[in-house]
Image (cartoon, rainbow, N blue to C red; front, top):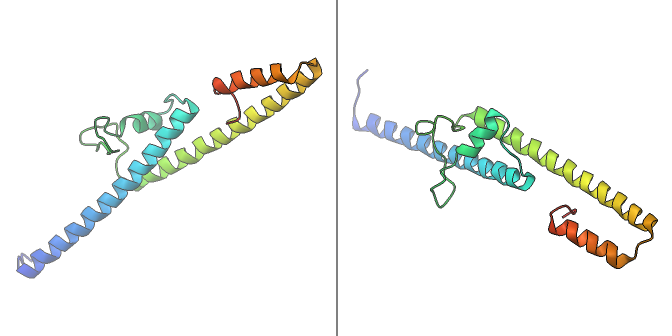
Length: 143
């Protein structure tokens, strides 16, 4: 029952090493997902709207040079290390990618309609090109 032999202690140490390695791998996976979601937020100019959005916004240490997770003990609003957190973040990434794709498709359709309108107006290409250049500079083009 209370066997504290060297073998048993070594067994506990090995188990602890495995758990710590698993924790590091999961933390890296969550940090990578958080970074991806935050990049999508910036790309989409997305303001946090849902509780998960706010958690994503506050879960990385802002003072760390490399992305580092702020654990729940120090930041109760952090996403944590659970499998549930991983699934929620993966779903959020997919949702944001879909929104981004839809926005790009919508922009492309609008630009196509603008092209048609320019042709119907009978304006010269230089004026149209200047207009499209202005759209691109404002971030409203397809790119």
